[in-house]
Length: 465
Image (tube, rainbow, N blue to C red; front, side, top):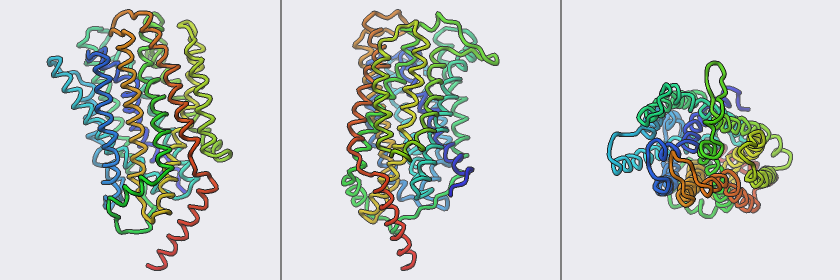
């Protein structure tokens, strides 16, 4: 039985990761086009190149983490040593240097690549913790629920407060230099919070699950096991498609409100002296709804199964996303309502994916006698990065194709394209995700058999020792 203190501690780690992840997903594209002043197509290409490389970097981190031995375990040391670099490089990513266009482009490639690498280096071990805190399937479902709940709380805070912080630091100055300063300082605040949360996760968690064999298997054996792990391939495809869905919607949201809704024409909503813009409220509503999805995922999946819950959620999200395209700019109530409903569906699938990756680890251990937790969990991060890479690249390229021009009134073609980013295009991702997950073979009954057999083998190995 995992104590509440440790469940919360585990959740703090993804709260930290998600605060930056959502800033990247929702604001980095528009930061690069409207504040950093790079062309949309160039940004799309940069996202694809850097993220594809970074996706390949994730398994390397998993392999190294699996071979880490320390008094703190295999995975927790990464939280301790990388929390500060994670924060510092995040700030540098949102900093605009006073150099030429070529210099800015090189700077963007370097800082963003470093950010994604350090994100992998801390997030892959963090994700792998789920597989070694407990071997019980229900414990993992609960831990995944805490993880995703805290992740969405962190995202909610970051998305709700980010633009108000930018406005506070700029003090009403709309000049480009003031905007650049405001964005950087706002990220500084978020970065400090992220580092503190990672330290909390390190302090409150514990690694318990030990592999059947203490001797580390050769790397080629781990890789061969992974390639033969059919459930892993299925989850990889489903995860990539789900992140394409999320990244397109998140990355286009600020464009949607800035250029289609024209949020500057609406009064800001003030609370406790803080003024919130429509796009920030929309994103925050999505995060709050994601939390609802996370909370309902565990009890529903415990009744009807993870696979059925996943497929139903993605099917509903597909239908709602297609309908979303037909809303006009005055339909704010419907726009916010559908954002909440779609986000509930999106929120429910990610804790299921994390839990299913843990199941893949057990499945592989039973088949091979080797446990490559870090390598398998790195694939979850890899699918996130790769899906995000595809979604962001598509967004940048299609913005250019539709004729988008930063900080100008957009053409009708550009507006129609921006509308598609929150509706038709994400629906393609949900359909693909359904297709992949329909082939997932590890049912709850099968996993119970696998867990029982592993427990028996572990008990026998203890007796022999």
